[in-house]
Amino acid sequence: FPGLADVSISQDIPVEGEITVPVGSHSPDEDYSTLDEPVRDTIMRDLKAVGKKFVHVMYPRKSSTLLRDWDLWGPLVLCVSLALMLQGGSADSKDDGGPQFAEVFVIIWFGAVVITLNSKLLGGTISFFQSLCVLGYCVLPLTVAMLVCRLVLLVGTGTISFIIRLLVVVAMFGWSTLASTAFLADSQPPNRKALVVYPIFLFYFVISWMILTFTPQ
Amino acid sequence: FAEFDDAANLLAANPDATTISIDEPVEIPKNQHSRLQEPGREEDDELLGTDDSDKTELLAGQKKSAPFWTFEYYQTFFDVDTYQVLDRIKGSVFPVPGKNFVRLYIRSNPDLYGPFWICATLVFTIAVSGNLSNFFIHLGKPTYHYVPEFRKVSIAATTIYAYAWLVPLALWGFLVWRNSKVMNIVSYSFLEIVCVYGYSLFIYIPTAILWIIPQKVVRWVLVVFSLCLSGSVLVMTFWPAVRDDNRRIALATVGTILLLHALLAVGCLAYFFDAPELDFPAPIIPAHNGTTVTTKSR
Image 1 (cartoon, rainbow over the protein chains, first blue to last red):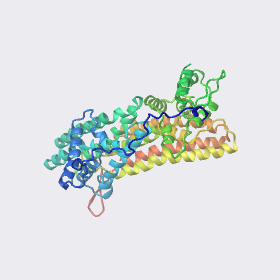
Image 2: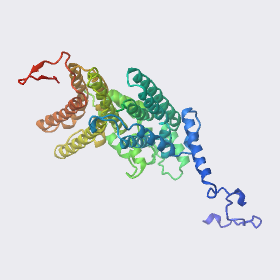
Image 3: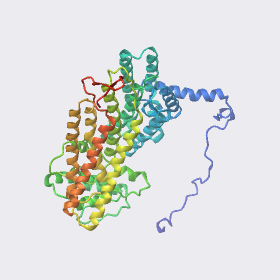
Image 4: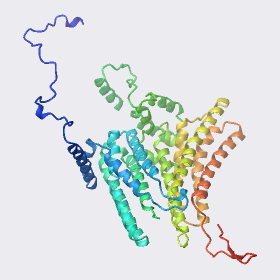
């Protein structure tokens, strides 16, 4: 570089210092290693995180806690309990009954993956697992609806019980869709919001249909 | 002259870009989206209505420049806005006689969003409507016990997705083969054919919902009506592509397209929707050994 030949480093600029980057305080009692804490603390911390996210779903506000610290424990618990509660449906032959455990599981997880891919392909800025986390947690109102439906079916199976179940499922379906839209809509480009919201609507509609058409033995 | 402003911004951002400072407009670097030119181009096409096949071919080549193993490559197939998807759906439901669906709406921007989600909606609509219609038909009978019939969802999904993807594949292969023998003016890419088929299935969604009505006449009128609409979209798209070929082959191709489309509609109606029972009670036929046999007319 011919232009730099006449540039020389002045002697009073110090060219010394520490190479190592400080990683935080060095005192051993402020060590944040979680290896030595009791198992109860570890479990309680994760349980509290999951519980906080459940509360965020039931009262959706624009907070970013669900998005920032994603985890898939909640969706797994919800999906398994929903699939278990959908068992025991009546069937004359194997082909006519309600969805099997594996079918519910696959529909929920595969559906969530497809919706996430769809939103990313349309230009969304949310990450893959964050979107899975939100979609999984927003199944909570529908799981509550399933629980209520099973309790109502224990009491009776007539028209009144059907109307109660219909109202509960419709209300929870609306709640799920609104909750997940509230969390996911901001990360989409503005002229494609409807394109992203519609598959979410279809996803929760299918789950609601499975819940509503559950008939016991 | 928005292009010059954008070019100036580009130059400021990327000083290494090669520029040609003559009277021609500045060269846009490869990774710049071709969307800059699209608004003006679309207006010209509305006014002139001419076949801009060479320009569209150029732009198609310019857009999909990402290698196929990157995510950006697949993002080019989802490069549609809400109003574009709604326009395409409207174009498939209200076909304008004489206007080609692909030329008018797709315009070298085929998307996979429409075909995929229309097929998904159709699968669940047929399954749910079939289940509901069977429920209403058999409602009063004492021996009837409601079943959700969930297995039919997988059957519906297999059928509809196979139709929406394998038939375009076969048609595209056939058109490419004929193109090598006879020079056709109009030729479609595989994605454009998938797009046309996907959007043409949209009319079956409200049809499936209306099939809940348990009247044979109503159902068949709906079949004919929806077949006319979506069939006309397909015919008007593919007739220009086979028109220059041997007359019999052209007619056979269009006939096969329509036949498969009709088979799909009729097949879905027959399999997912039970036939509505007749209203009068079934006649009782006394058998020879004294026991009575009732026949149910299905």
